[in-house]
Amino acid sequence: MSVLLRTIFLLSLSTLIVACATPSLEDQPSAEFGDANLYPVNNSGFQQAFVARDAGLASYRSIDAAPLELAGLQMPTTVIRGTQRRDLQMTPERETAFQEEWAKAMDAAFRGYDLGGQAKISLKIEARLIKIEPGLRTAMTIGGTAQPMADALDISAEFRLSDAGSGRLLAVIRDTRSITAGALSRTAPATLNQLFGSWAALLHTRVSGR
Image (cartoon, rainbow, N blue to C red; front, side, top):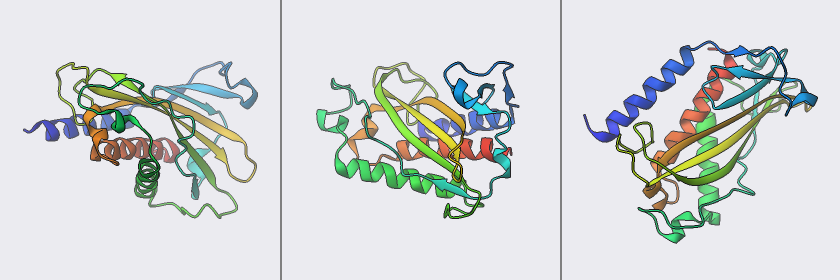
């Protein structure tokens, strides 16, 4: 089995395991999101997840997916093996490509929903990339291998889910995953597209409850 096929298999297996796990809420609300009365979620598949007990995410059939937010994204300040300095800059072309690929990933993941966001009752999903920083390649690095090598990038994101009509915050999700550093030598690398697809698919699983 090739390295790429093995990586895709491992990612698919991990997604399946996560999807089968049953999320559960902790007893006390999060101090960080106390005003919104959000509770920490165990077994969400993401590093951190907080949700309102009465969020009712599965009741939404319309999704308003906001464009991927890249303002304030922290990028590496030093060159990483497998990259050049220009690869670690968020150019206008790369920003457009990232936003287009995120939109495609959300359209694919939520294809059974009304995606116009114009329905009277709609769930707004906002996604923001927070930081891209050096990491260590592992077996779960998209486009990577099992050897721990210092040529990976950890990408951190935050997702906010709210009722589009009232603006009420229903959930906040944070996650960090890795891609090979060399992937950024292209404006919109295939490995990053896989990462966006993985995030969007897991969001769908947690919103739909299936």
